[in-house]
Length: 341
Image (cartoon, rainbow, N blue to C red; front, side, top):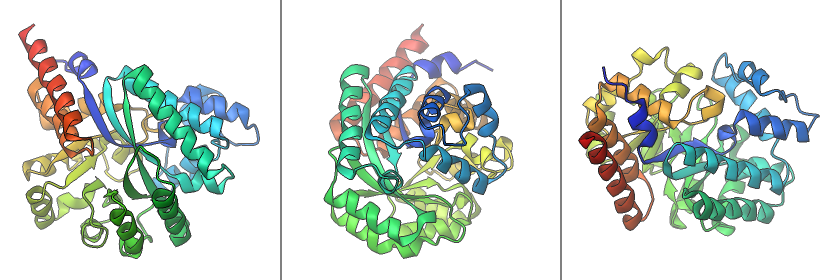
């Protein structure tokens, strides 16, 4: 079988499901931990490998929140955001919608306007200096309850930064039903934001239906259990509601037992618009290039098949039409040049 890694490495890509704090590389996490020595997070990048080994989804959330606690100043926020873009540029990611949880940072004492200024400064610098277009999804941390939903909605609607395009819901699904967040999504949608909640990662397909019905989801974060419901897959396919699939993440959090049993094949066979994403890449020991390699193996793809997956992400993104056409053109040109050689 052809080794697709060199092709994937150079392929222009978009990423739609990747978390802000969860994208902090070991180098950045260790630097932040050294700045804040009262944290239990290791300062040694090698020790972080063991620290980022999860027993289940609840343990993952616990570790994730300990890293969130390292981001305490606007300077921390700006550093983290720009360095994420630098890592993306190395992978030829042209466009990314980065999921940010402003509630967590503001609650920890960062001034809300300084927070917005920090991410926006990093965004404009990333586009100018690195060629990476960043957009934001502000998400509600579901484990923090309706108070966090109210605050996240206020921050998104009243202080809306220029790069904000969507509104999400993350954190644990078990014990956090989607319908209770309907009023907040209604307000965000009325303000012009797109709906992109997590659903069906660690719960069944009913959670996905709830996200569609109550939260008016335009894309679904993960949606792993959708494969258990043929009617749901047919609905997603018919309405071109994309699934943000994160294969390695699903294994790391025990949402799926192993890669060979990942439901991505059933999703694609049903005609669902599938996009490939890395979720929290350093925490899961992966990156977007690796995830494309995993998807190519599971789906039996060649170069054109991988390029088609990359174009799925562009199609499902909230980039403007001219931007979509530009990146799609780059993908096609790169693929034709590669195959010609």
